[in-house]
Amino acid sequence: MKAELLYEGKAKQVYRLEGTMDQLVLSYKNDATAFNGKKKESFDGKGRLNNEISSRIFSFLHDKGIETHFIEKWNENEQIVQQTEIIPLEVVVRNLATGSITKRLGIEENTPFDPPIVELFFKDDELNDPLINDEHALFLSSVTESELQEIKEKALKINVALTELFQSINISLVDFKLEFGRLACGSIVLADEISPDTCRLWDLNTQEKMDKDVFRQGTGDLIEVYNVILQRLEDLS
Ligand code: UDP
Image (tube, rainbow, N blue to C red; front, side, top):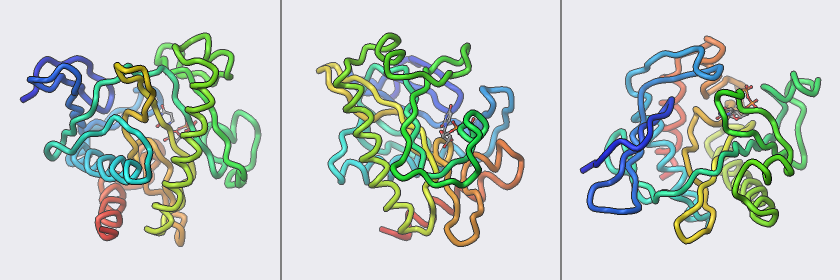
């Protein structure tokens, strides 16, 4: 059973899991938002797809030795996670240039980044999640210098694991966003979700976009492409 609603974001609700002090229920909504909430639409089945996809990816990362908040998938739209205090940083890893970096730095679309680029954004809707540097991150969050290095190293390790996973289902992992959280014991683990809402996923053969860009750009059927991602992940197991 769920107890009280603790938080409601654009894509998820967060409840306390009844009978526990430190476990949460993440309830995935059907809403899709883009451009900081300016574009919004609801898609039947989106919550189920992201819950399923993110559960599979977090289990995969756990098996690769990466510590996460994920405990288990609970039902169609919900999963149980360890409570953390979310660090207000969006950690973006880029393998190929697209999206905001091409406009900001005038980099040609599809330019490969080798080594991959890690960027930090301050998680603050009112400020439009600005790009920040390490010193800003140390000032704006509770992380220490060595924790910040640890976060970046983890992000790159996750990139290696996920690039391989997606390659095995014929998808190019172009870029993605991670969030980290602090457990009560003080250590920092991967939190939030990893799904087509938070990654750019392109079909390796056709270059077709299989992620939230189809909604952002109005170029395709969100449910159809999220379904393909889940289907290919399911076919792996
Ligand atoms: N991203 C995200 N949430 C955000 C911003 C970005 O999940 O609030 C993801 C996005 O899906 C992409 C990556 O982070 O996979 C890099 O996004 P970018 O900075 O290029 O932003 P955009 O072009 O979407 O503004």
